[in-house]
Image (cartoon, rainbow over all chains, first blue to last red; front, side, top):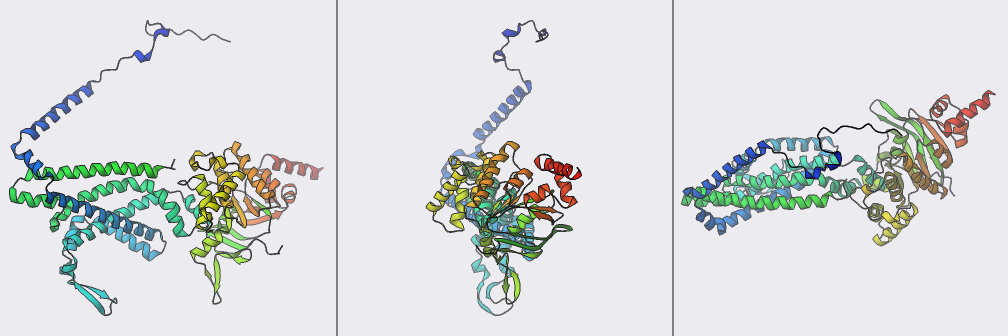
Length: 291
Length: 271
């Protein structure tokens, strides 16, 4: 056996005395600068919040749990849930349509997704709210044939129905894209295996493909839920009594604009943070069994 | 025992665009018979397995399972495709084992083997569970019943896949290159399970690259090239006495037992 050549250590420290556990951290000057800048900014902002007379913190406290505000918050949540549930269902249907392989259906679904992803939700809300100008009565009957019943549009389309329709149709287009990404993420062999076992197309989709697609579908759906919740603030333009509208009603009377907007922001923040926490738990649940 | 073959494939044609994958393939598989399909990559062996299992539509020809036409029915004197539900029922009477195992990744091993029995064949869950455990025992994996597929080695996954395919009492088992995705040291555990099935009298089609295994397990070997069955016969005929130059060329590319046999045979004929 040959003896390894002796290397001379660069420092005069004997090699056996080196233990990196005793090393001291390096000084990082940029971190100190960033820390100092942040400290100044935070201090300045806090000073602004405390000293600005227009913020009127007691007013914020007075309205935070005001029944009208809470009703508005409830309406925002209700609209979000309805739009998400109906939108997800419609989104899955749209994606099933796009996968059907039957050309006219594929086309119809593709056109729908393209159109409704392109139109801003605000424009849609105003459109649906004003549907009565375009179509004074909503008929039910044979297409191009006799009409059995018809209803005046303005009695059917309230600001609530307009809000539900607008948000749902918009949401469905986005959910279709999300569902698509989820389904393409599932290996084709899974579907093959399901069909080979004797599952029908529907059974293999519902039992095998969709549950595995959920892992990919859940995270963007969570963000989508949050987007829709914030999107509900748009319905205030059609006089729907959501959180933002309820706040506006009050500050139009009292001129306490800033404190009431803070009330709205606080509630949006609370809801979004709780949603994010819930989303993380869902992700963990659907992540099991995956690599 | 009746004369009707379990599987009858008649002049089946299949093309993908310009590529002819199956060019008039005919094959009968009788009760208890084990047919090994060999041939170079792209020869159409896997396509044949997938077409028999109706995972791919065929362009022409006909296939019968126990005398029943697969995928089509006569309606007022005309042929028409069966509805999905009935095609699914036909698939449920065959078992398929894939190269990539394709175990359902979101279910435990046990549920992989239980689910089709309950869902497709209407067995009671308790009964299906007992049957699943019996099959897992048979492939030597009863202790993995509660594991998720991703925790298992490739060889173990493939053995579970075999148990899953057996769970519905298939009339015929189709193996699509069951060991091609495995590390070499895991091949034998899978092949021994397949061999065990063959000895138990299961009717099988095995698409494989394992020549020595094909020779050992098969009652009949089929050599495919360019979408056609070039030669068919007993393993001895195929490996020791290949008639066509194409089969001879194919076998000589394989090192190991098949190629050695082939060389020995050539020496014998030349001396």
